[in-house]
Amino acid sequence: MREGQNTRALITRLIAGLFAIFIAAAGLAAGARAQTAEPAAPPQVRELLRLLGEPGVRSWLEEELKKSPKPEPQAATRETSSARFAAERLAVARARLDRLGAAVPHLPEEFRDAAAVLADELHNRSLFGVILLVLGFALLGWGAEWAFRRATRAARARAEHAPFDTVPHRLRATAVRFAFGLTSVAVFGLGSIGAFLAFDWPPFLKQIVLAYLVAALAWRVVLLVGRLLLEPKMGADDAARYRIVPMPDEAAAFWHLRLGLFAGWFAFGWATCEVLLTLGFSQDSQSFVAFTLGLALLAIAIEAMWRQPRPHAEAGGKRHREAVDWLLTAYLVLIWFFGCSGCGAFSGSRSSRSCFPSRSRS
Image (tube, rainbow, N blue to C red; front, top):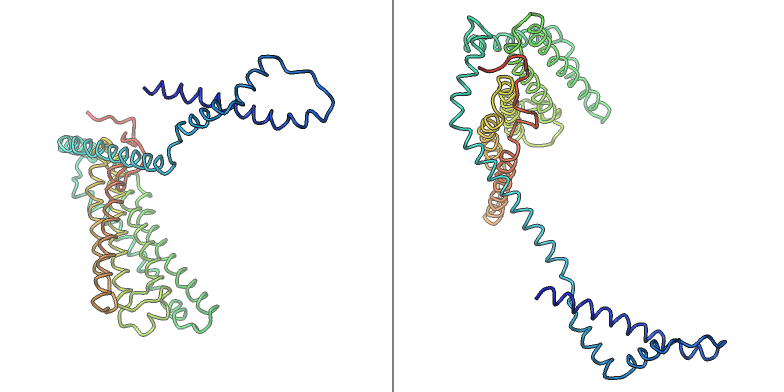
């Protein structure tokens, strides 16, 4: 049936083309008489033109042109493409979730293998000893930072009481505060990571401790930027004038706390996934752990959105605000779901092989 329609459409277009040739030839016939005589057309062409000029033939051609198939609307094509894309993405997400679920029964075995690798690497050290080692070097970094802040207390006090009336004064004061804060974080990094790298550690232990120390350093940088933007000192007289993002004290303290929680958990999750990669966990197991850690990030984001300080509004405004919050919650859940089911909340495109290929899992 489909082939017959295509053949009929082809014949119709061919006849329509001949009909157009006839119209053009008829229009040129009058002008051709007034010009120099040219060789006469072959008898077959004259017979074809005579047939195309008959009223019955012309009426039949017009009816066939009306019956020719029309192209499909472009909007319908776009809808089909969008539906196909959504179906493909859902199929990919479902396959990914199936793989994550299949990885769960193998997690205990992979953790036992990782524990065996660590036991062989650390010799007499336990996991609790590794945690104490990380905390010890972190405390060493904080101690170095405390010493730096104590040594520069007078200079920081002068910077805080500098003029703050004009735009140049504000820019200068902000730059000075940021420089002191960034230097403090750098001192923390030197005191923790620098001191740790000064010793010779086993490869796996070095990779694990370094991952969490770098995560702590990144978290400190985020806290510094958040404090510079929000200045969350509740009740301080000079807090509001240093605050770059204008908002009440309660809102500034709220958002600074949520920013710290989100950044801290993200840094911890990133370091954990790096450790799993180092210990040779499979890609699906890494993604499952990242999927689980991502739940906490989603919870922090949703809790911050629903409990953020708001000005009092009338009943109609409250209902509108709740509707917007529900829509944003659904949007966050979709982002988390597709992101985690596709590549994990923390893990990237790196393979699941160990960072030390010379060592193999037994």
